[in-house]
Image (cartoon, rainbow, N blue to C red; front, side, top):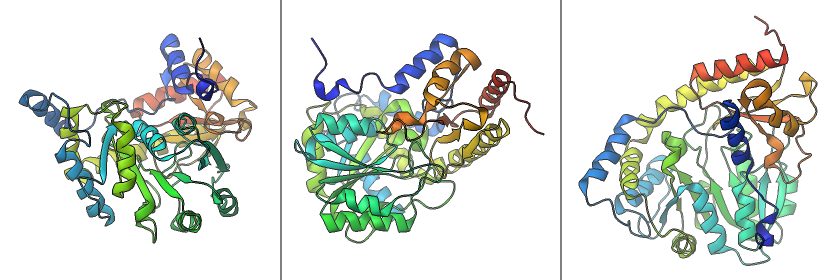
Length: 388
């Protein structure tokens, strides 16, 4: 009795493996991207009120509770000028990961080809495989992770779909308007469906987040995915959504109904309240994360690593080659026992594992004292004396 062939190659995710090592060794977990503090207490209070109301503890409608669907549509219009139908243009999901899976299952036929920028969040590959489709990879390479427009145009020919993640995990890149315009041209010229993963949309430190759907010719072909977990520091709530043209959202809904149907009803009500006043909640979080980014980047640089400073998101990538290391996977697997710190080899996010052999991803969505403790452990383990 074996796992289906289409999933056999994926095995256990690198996050599961490294988080298990963190638990076994008591290491500081800078691998998996979850904050170590909760979001705003007002949002928790909204969830408590919903839990105690008695009316919000049963199944939500398949599309999501109407208040949340309306809040998502209003957010898209208020922030980006996008017109979204709150009834047929929004589908609430169990986090962005389910939205991605339902999108692939609902819109792809076996044999379809999907353009994906690599490195990529690992669920993309698995969801594409579950739909019987295949990937066409366009590499973003260190140190600047710039988009190769020529490679993108070539990959788009004959494809069915393009998946775009900006702000990008794991690199922290925020694609420029010029890069996004090139993506839009490729989609329009080749009649591609665009699927955009924008879960870090509120967490941009440098540059500007421009949704692909706002560019000419893209609103009618773009499915936008986001979630509350990253924006409001409630990653365990797993409240995500897909929004866009009703035909695309309808396809997602067709698959979603047979995955989990609906749930998290009280939390959906709380997220509706959070989105109604998003900037007030997100502003302090963004400022704190930017300070944590700078703290970790500075510390890793003092240890001798070459740091790729991220423009958004939760993660920083650092090159360990200056430390005399040549294999980030081996280094990361030894790190919990050696230094009491967990990090992720960036090559885990590439289809080509040799694309970034000495690059390591660290999460900075942690309290300052946790970052400082991790840096101290790394310094001690490598015998490095930081410059003043």
